[in-house]
Structure formats: structure tokens, C-alpha cells
Length: 170
Image (cartoon, rainbow, N blue to C red; front, top):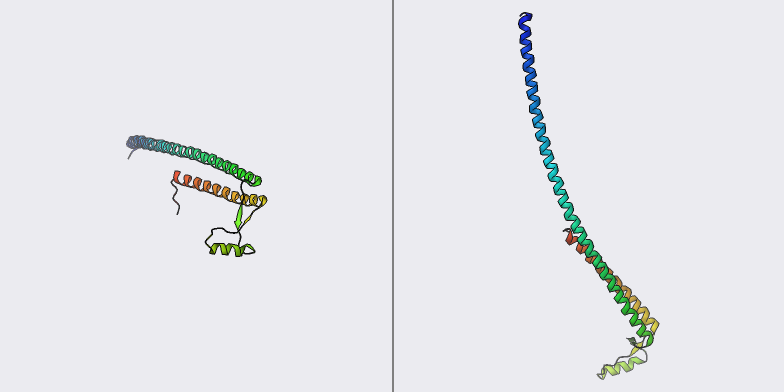
């Protein structure tokens, strides 16, 4: 082959290769553009779903927070009421308006109590508590009642959060 036949053949092959390369690039660019469009749609869809889920959770959190605040206010009111009642009781004990006593078994009163019970009488020997002892016992009972109220409030808060967020306990 001579150089004159060879050059046109190389030029044709070179032009064909260049045209093929260009067509392949356009096709590749179209595929990349389609992948970018699909990725943008998926990103937008995921962002919308995330925003909706976040809004639902924030709504649940606000509602749960408001309910917990109401429960805390209710607990405070219960404790204030109980303290008022306890103070009134202690004042009545100190003034003598209320007297506390406990049943007594044994000692000198035992024979009287047993014979009275045997005779069908409902009288029972009792010992009256002094005001300080009555106040101390009431304080112990009040502390227990306060702890029970606080524990019930804690259980209510736990149940609220569990039910609000549909947490399954095992």
C-alpha cells in the first residue's frame, strides 16, 4: 500500500473513531443525567419522608410533654392537699380535738378486757398516744403516702411515654 491510499484510509478510520467516541460520550452523558435525575427524586422523596416523620415525632413529643406537665401539676396539687390535711390533723391532735389510741393487750387491763369480751361487751382496753407520738406516726404515714403518690406519677409518666411512642416491652 502506498502512502496516498493509506492516508485516506487512516483519515476515514480516524473520523469514524472520533464520531463513535462522540456518540458514546453523548449516550454516557444521557445515562449520567438520568441517574442524577433519579437520585435527585429519591433524595427529595427521602427528605419529604424525613420531614413528615420528624413533624409526627415532634407533635408526639409536644403532646407527651404537655401531658407530663399536667401530671406534674396534678401531683403538686395532690401533695399540697395532703400536706394541708396532715397539718390540720396535727393541729387537731395538739389541741386535743382528735385523740389517738391503740389497743392494749396484757397488764392490769387484760383481765378486765378478757372478762368484758367474754361477757359480750365490745369494750377493749386502749392506751392514748401523746401528741408528739401521734405527730411522729402521722409524719411516717405521710412520707409513705407522698412516696406512693410520686411512684404512681412515675408509673403514669412511663405508661404515657410507652403508649405515645408505641414502645413494646418484653
